[in-house]
Length: 306
Image (tube, rainbow, N blue to C red; front, side):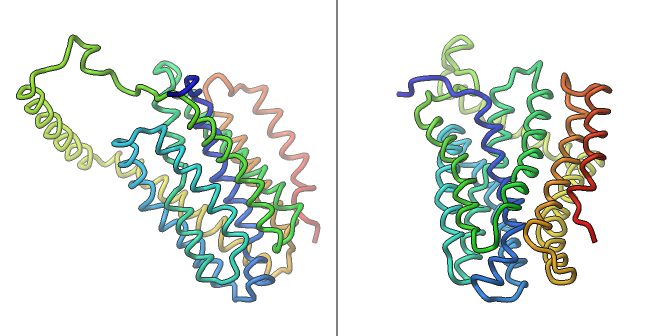
């Protein structure tokens, strides 16, 4: 039995480990593969592809598990797995083990579970505020991850991952010590439990209604437009921003870890400003103007001189 009610902020914090790892892997992994594993740069793409492929299946799997085992337990288990896998990947000494570790890390991603936690616990009147705020924090984590990676070198991947693993460890510990959260009203709350026969018919009708709603939704063009947007963003983040750009800068232009890390610092800062500008109760012309001025003032120092 838990000792306190888990706060909504745990879902926001759990998102940051995914985005911190994105910056650190994008910066240090090419150098780790080259200097520690002594393999070609193609293995960087293989490891990141395995991670995102694992996440594609893992996000669906963890959602199904959360529906049956409970969101609190599933998020705590995913965070615990992230602690182990983040520390394992920095100590592997073969490309096969690296690919397996990255794939497993994708399978246990806390991205969807963290957003689900925020959506489940946020007051309905402030749901947009909390969801947008969670994304703002996640984009800030990209910038922080770039700052951490910029202070290290490729062989320091284990240390960088160990620093990131503190966050999912903290979230897992707080969730395990918390009470279970009631995410939906119980049958007794609405006047008592229904008889078994009525409950069975009601359950079947609900499943038929859900299938009918899904068929109607899939027939609408705007649904596919909304689904295509995160697909494009995922391709950019995984293929270009995290995998292709760091390798090209390293091999073609001879950039080191600190220089490549500035790309993630600048990208995280720009995304942070963009998301903040449309976040309810945060956005204002004054803050946006100050943020844009700060971004412009620091762009020259973030980008290396040629």
